[in-house]
Image (cartoon, rainbow, N blue to C red; front, side, top):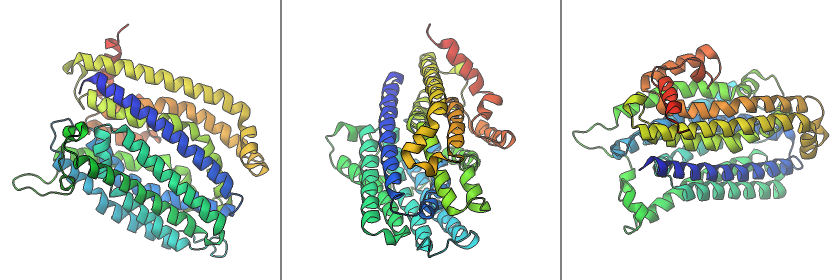
Length: 439
């Protein structure tokens, strides 16, 4: 696939991801405002901080490294080995869900059942929903590698909308169910998401005349299942080693990214009600980062991974590809910086007004506005961090990813080490990119 075609598909993927994030956040925005009028802030705190942290930690530790490694390979790879590697996310997810579920039930403070009922059920179901979502990982990677934009839009939109409708109906009709409501909605969401991918590929592979089907490396659904072949390794060991390198980096990044939730969960610095208020303000503050920067980072990581050869010096790569990467990287940096500066300026001026409109005096009084203004400054840093990170992680070799993990520990924060400790391959590649940029 030519770099221009990859760029076009990556741009469509980013724009669709942006629209999805806008839809998701608007739904979540309205849903939270609705829930606050029917349920206690303690339940909101347990769901949005503790149970969501259990789910996100399990998912992140089980699949993030596999996604990054398996989206990097070229067109000539053995996809059966890639699928075998991706299916390892399921037993890994089972392990993390059992271990973290035990920690959440046995080591952490259990909320008062009269205030937050059915806590144990909530932990079990949120952990189970993480494992269910991992069942769709091979389908997701195959769809992303071939940039099936509509599939991602339909699957995620449908699952989020149905989850939100179910949550709203249960909150309205059965508010006494407490955590049962959010547990059922979460499991329903992951099930619908996986079924969308399975049904899509079942129909696609059943239509041999489809142009999309002819471009896929599989011809039937059984090709996506784990497969042992004689005289051939079960997995591609190069991808497996790269996965391990990304896992070490991802593990540290998860701790740093979700640091405030881990502090609240394990150190009990806030009660459950205050955790609920903090999480609402936190979601508002990170809204722009999730709406704009995250879809761009995810989509253009695929673009850079396909256009540039991992770990290879810029002078040894196709100069046409390097020039295209240079133009894209510069444009992304300008866009991210412009968006970050805009949010910083207007966020400082209207933080208190935004919180008062959304949640009333409960949010706009006290430390809420100060917290939201702080997030506006943080967004400016995220603007640059996301773009540089997706480029460098797509260009790094396995050894450089390992060194990057060590740099995270020394730096104490994810992302900015990619600017402070320039690895031997991507730093000259970055310079070569800009030197190849057309005037």
